[in-house]
Structure formats: C-alpha cells, structure tokens
Length: 217
Figure 1 (tube, rainbow, N blue to C red):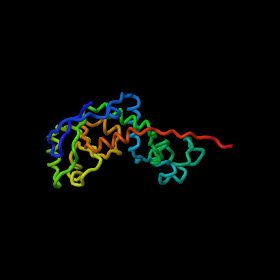
Figure 2 (cartoon, rainbow, N blue to C red; figure 1 turned 45 degrees about the vertical axis):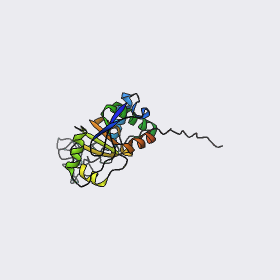
Figure 3 (tube, one colour; figure 1 turned 135 degrees about the horizontal axis):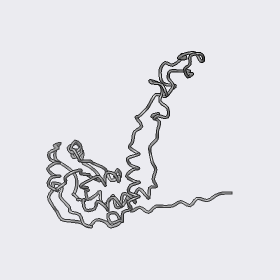
Figure 4 (cartoon, rainbow, N blue to C red; figure 1 turned 90 degrees about the vertical axis):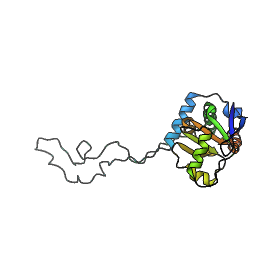
C-alpha cells in the first residue's frame, strides 16, 4: 500500500510504501465494533441523576390516617408511584460506563482500522506554519485535497500549527499515542507526518510479553 507525500507547504512530493505490518492487516468486523464501542463508552459521562425517595423534599407527614378512609394506606407523599414522588431505579450519577480491553487487542484494532482507511492516508514532511493564521492551515489542507472530516496525526505538533488548526470545523489533531479506532474510522482523510509513521510502526509492532505466573508453596 502506497501513500502520497507532500511538503509542509502542501506541494506534492512523491509517494512512499506504508509498512505492511500496520497498514496491511486483515480487518475483523466484530473486533473493530468492540473497540469502537469501547471508546464511546469510555468517554461517556454520568451526568444523569434522579432524586430517589429519600432525596425528595417533604413527605414527612402521613397523607391520611391508616384506617377508616376507604383509601389505600400511604406513609409518605414521596412514594415513587405518586406525582412529585421519588424515582425508583433511576440513574444515580455514580454509574461507571468504562470498558476494558487487552493492550494487544487495542493495538490489533488500531492496525485493522488503519488498514481499512489506508486509501485515505496522506503523508506530510511536518506540520508547521510561520504565523498564527487559520487560513494558512486551510490553504495547506486544500492543496493536499483534504476534505470532510480530517484527522491529523503527528509525532510533534508546532504550537502555531495547533493554534491555527484547532478551530477549523471537521479537523481533529491527535498525537500518535492518542489514536483511537473511532477517530480513524470516522475520518475521511488521515494526514500523518513522516515522523509519526515511524513512531506508529514502532508502537504498534511491539510484541506482547506474556508473564508466566507460578504458585509458591
């Protein structure tokens, strides 16, 4: 698999062969789905919260006497079946939605996602601009044909480039170690710098070391 390369100004330079160990992996749809859903679950917040019976104000007085009224007995107006009562079994704000995944599977999923999107990958020498101007970054992206949702992955980003690109709609900047399956699969174009490709290959090609545990008597 080959990818086009560009200078930092957006001029076409040539093409390079992407490492097969990272960009030529057969994809497993079920694993990619699990990795995608894991990312979404791990960024989910638990802001939803309801008031339970003990947290609703009022209800300290028994609505009516126990017997003799012909009505059902109640001890509090904050019963969940009453209007303005507490909510039973609702979210408490303490839910934990995070999902785990073995490191080897995370690396494998990233390689599969990158292989699926290999045709959308472009390489630049580095990401840098001479001044704090968003239009300069937009001009570079236009020159290399980066349209839609653009994911920029760099080994090291220039401070001026970050400030100039972070407010562009549809452009996301990530370091190599911040890559995730969702960002890769959602991107229309993925732009790496040359140093990021080297760092990515070294990171994702790590062999998983399995520790052998023994019991001591």
